Length: 415
Image 1 (cartoon, one colour):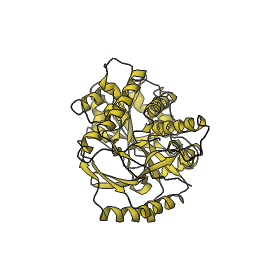
Image 2 (cartoon, rainbow, N blue to C red; image 1 turned 30 degrees about the vertical axis):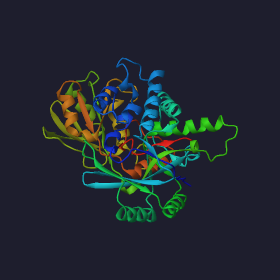
Image 3 (cartoon, rainbow, N blue to C red; image 1 turned 90 degrees about the vertical axis):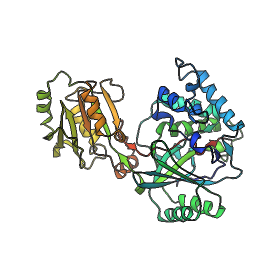
Image 4 (cartoon, rainbow, N blue to C red; image 1 turned 90 degrees about the horizontal axis):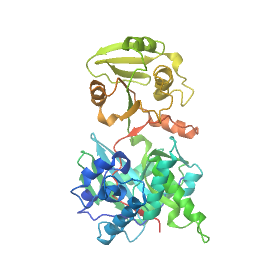
């Protein structure tokens, strides 16, 4: 059963939270992070993207970068830009986007739950990215950023959270530059904390929604620490890591689309002809066309949008991987027609989060950078959970969750 643990959070004072809070480390490159934090000494980016305070030519995975992270983290604490709570609490994190608010329970997840697959994954991780975040956790001895988990909704948990937010003023409440609202409550009532922990103990599994590399890194550093501690008891803080848990019925997965640089030597007419083997094709003209259901795709080619509807023989409804639209596109188009065998490494394909809109796909094709674009219908939470429960792994770049968690609202120290 899933473990939820209260902890002594390290948090910014209310008058600084908007300046400290930042986008996650992995949605910004170094140049973007440097620009975003250039006039803001309080931004957590100085810790999670510490290369922004060093020479732009530096190797972002070199020792001085991690040392700068530690130096900045200590400085934030010395200057009381991050202040430790005196007791162990749980927290509620609400996010508002497009008129909808989702509420997550902030607490620590268990390293053992990750190792024993109580925390279930749906994506493969890359060892180099794992090691990068492991170095960051090791040198700071802290989880600077939370991971984004989901769990099967429990009415009793929903009721407790709803009652708490109705009867208590949020500790933080602000709208970020991107228009996303962030609302944060500290649960200090020990009775409520105990009730939530007990209810969580009845949940059989939780699911990594976003942050597979951060999750792996946090769990593996915890395992390292226990392996090197001859007096390990299992109660140490390093046995847990920072997570925000959202009920599955509140989350939104949006589309994750593809753009390809060339047609693998085919003319547009030849390419369209080959597509007819797997799809019913309907030309939609110059107006943007968005897929309206599973197994329907939109394609932008040569200034025109097309509807592609997968033929029945191209997918298997009883196969949790085979039924996915990303699998259909890969098996019917990307591999056999366009010759893209390895989605993780090919330089001929790129992936565009749906938050950018289908206008971004059209822009990249019209610019000449790309030759063709494909928009997919979003994966559902049920599909994600079915795949994780079956022990399968989704193809690369399948899910895009919005809104992203803001980093810096609370930090978890490992001692």
